[in-house]
Image (cartoon, rainbow, N blue to C red; front, side):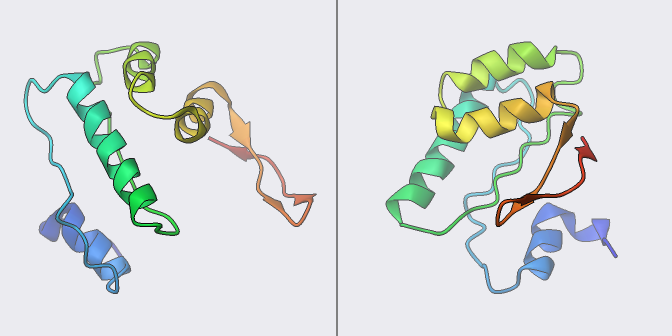
Length: 113
């Protein structure tokens, strides 16, 4: 059950109540350049690395903000600011039509993306 009345912060904090570090959340800003969005992603990744955290949830929703821009243009702009080891898996989501989950050397059935 998703309650849209509380916004993204509400949904995530209800799903993961023990994680209270939401002050880095950025919202859509009209006419914001893609390089600033890329920079915000990079700052978030650097923070996770610097604090030796196990992982992070970084979600970027391009649908409404960039629905008139080709994905390849967005990817080229973002790629300049994000290390390859983080960027390549995201890039693969746009170019591959399916993916598999590998657990202990056993690949599952392909999942359409």
